[in-house]
Length: 227
Length: 103
Image 1 (cartoon, each protein chain N blue to C red):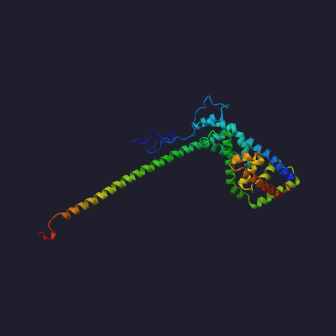
Image 2 (cartoon, rainbow over the protein chains, first blue to last red):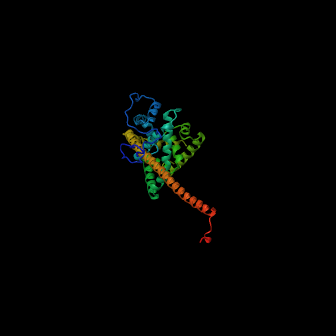
């Protein structure tokens, strides 16, 4: 007795092998050419609805459209190219999976940026313990000495060194402080924007930003940068 | 205060070009990598959902068969008990002569 038809062309037929999932999955990839109507000028909403139909080519347009903005934000959180690559891919992968939750009540860009900030925050939280364990106390001390010497010898650090100093000082802050400082100081976002992106209250953002800034300054002084 | 702000600001502005450089580097081919990632993720999800569905189907069939066999065994056992009980009741109720007085 045949219980089910061969489920998948790539897989062998077995009596109890499952057929296609009865629940229709939104966002499942299928290879089909991009409809002629879908162009670079199409609205985000049109592209999103095409993507929701399971068209990866439509989603590729969104990736192309927003990758510079996503990379602009993610590059402020990642320490190197590898981390940035992982982080940006993670953001787009989560965007693809989360597309069904996008309600067109707000622009797609806002939705995507909120998601990106959430992924970056998760990234900071996940990597905190790892980062703490990654560098031993000895290495930290050695690094501090070197950075102190450099800052004393040459107040004008090059981009790589300045980044290293900044990251080193930031890593001692908790993830929420890092998030708010990165958005405020590195991305020059307003308090209202940060509140919108993080879902925190405006007063919470203000207070946290001020405290985090003071901690960062103290850390920089400890590193020998600033007075 | 002004000096401190300037100093922090200067450090941040000095660090930005290195971050922008990384962003420009990663931007090359990001779209292709993301799409390849989506393809493989979707494929593994499909396989997972198919195997999950197979597992559920197998579990359902196993439970059904087990219930059917158990039910049949219980019915048989119950029936034999009932038969024994009926026979013993029949024997006891029957007004047959006691074995002792039989020749």
